[in-house]
Structures are given as C-alpha cells and as structure tokens.
Length: 137
Image (tube, rainbow, N blue to C red; front, top):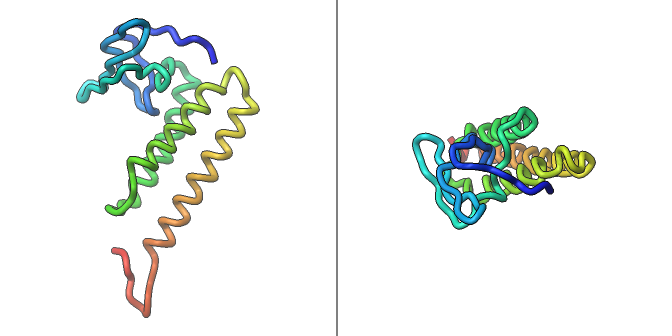
C-alpha cells in the first residue's frame, strides 16, 4: 500500500462516506467531519482514502449495498457488526484497486458473496410464515 499523504481540509472517503479532514497530529488523521458530525480517534488514516474517481466508484458501490440492507429495516439486526464487515471489505478493495487488481477482484467477490448471503437470509426471514401467520411485519 502506498503511504497516504493528506492535509487538513482535504476531502477523503472514510468508511465509504465523503468527509473532510479537520485535524492531523504527527502525520495521523485524528479528526474528520461530514459537515454535521465529527469523528475523533488517535489514527483514522487507515480508513481514509483519497477523493478520486476510483475511490468514489468503490465507495458508492459499497454504500449502495449497505443502504439495501438498511431498507430491509429489521430492528433486531446487528447493524454495527454488519457495517464493520462492509468497512473491512471496502478498505481491502480501496487498498488493492490500483496496486493489486487481482486481490481487489478477490475482495470484491468476497464482499458480494457476504452481501448476497445477508440479503437472501434477511429476505427469507422477513417473509417467514408459520402456520399461515406472517411472523415479521
């Protein structure tokens, strides 16, 4: 992976969302903002990628899949863990898109398999009937 070089006020993708860098300490991104909310940490850099067309396409793609899951709207879902897994795949895809395209394709395929399994399971769960009674509204 290439060394990331950012400065305050740069726009980057963080967890597949567009944000602005607000603070950098010792070369590490420590604060970002989407204009409404701020996120702080000792180092957000590993989760930040440049605002270019390749990263936009990957981010938009992953975000659209996450939005599909949100539309299913089941209160019992473990959204934090599902998002964390999406972010893990997103990071791998972003890191490898230009440096190791074969690995990018492998990670994208794993992501799509995970997504399809989640969607299939949730769709089946929502249409579950027992003795003629729809269990989930």
